[in-house]
Length: 211
Image (tube, rainbow, N blue to C red):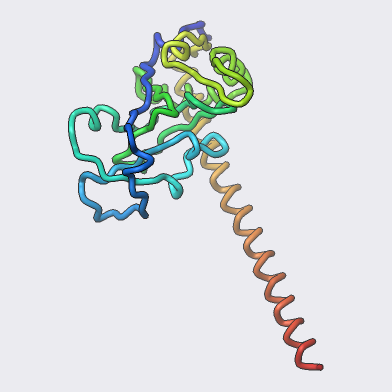
């Protein structure tokens, strides 16, 4: 049903792009769909929340187009893994994330086969996967480091193609359910919040008018 393989046997792992002086020269701004071609999204480990990318918070910066930048462009279903962090983080790159590169706080895992990236993300965010990633990290409790070489050596169970296809479908279904549940929870929170604030506002106006 599954065989044990090294991550490096089924995917490539690369360090994110290192841009010296980025903190001083980059000028973060809102993402503009009309932005010129040199505008690039720069994904950092801080953009991973709850095992997913938070695209609204991703900074953009202007970079001169060249082969080095182009080589680092992320692709859908790439898996981003924390290279410098206090905890293990991993996220799947969605198709909607265009013209984006990962910075040096992340490792980019690119599966050799279509669809495999989603399973790799599921594994790396599982309890067993996190334990293996954590075991490969070096450093202290304040900051952990993970090299591309160390990540490629992690072993994982690789399902046979028929089972893998079903697992990929399950990943997609679970993500749709997660999105629906999250949206519903946000809507309930906003509805309750706004209703309570409105009632308090009306009550304060009534009390003020009676004085």
